[in-house]
Length: 318
Image 1: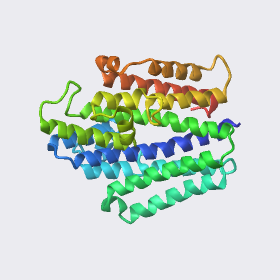
Image 2: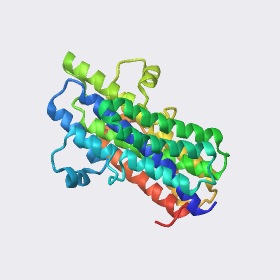
Image 3: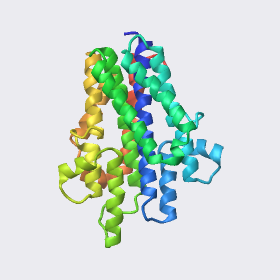
């Protein structure tokens, strides 16, 4: 396959996944902001969202130092100058799909095209202002539809491997960011709770985080117990059978890399395999003891390195 074609496929799926995960991060922030909590805690959530997305300087340049929930939401959803906004991601996904129109099935192209046209119409019609939760659910649904159509209609060849590779590499990155921002700004700590009020806050706070990655029912099925922060971390980091966990994503990355190359000297495959092994044999108590934020920061650096090696080995020169 031409590196130019592989590049467009890889980034089409990454941008689609990024739009969904931006919607998930915004949704969990919006939902937790509705819970009874101090104004400082609410503000910290929105500041954390900008920080973990590495957009704080960009936001400050456009909106000043004051972090307002509505301004952050507009910046992350409809600002076309923000390359990580939902509308920018969906437009980029559509343009990458257009560039390789002949490689995609009609259903895949029409899904990408319709998603972008519809999101423009919805934002112009005020859908975000009327019901942010419903808008974010729509973005997630369109991403689910795109993946389903891709897997259900594309030939099982290298094109699909690059699409899946982009999806799971982006998902690993964004899941780590979501875990980091919510655990880093959480008011409760792993050592436990001291009052019934704290327990109520913990339940709704961690429930919102689980729902943001479609893991609330999964948590109940796996642990059959009250929601505890350390178990939330374990589920989203170390459970291979959890679709959005870090280990689950790295298993998929390795699976698709193995189908794309059999070279023993492949650096991206070596680094991906090493990261996957580190997750596979890790324990959550050890991760928490050494610091969850430090662990996730290192994970993000390693995922970015893997992405850079994939670009050098398979895609267009950066």
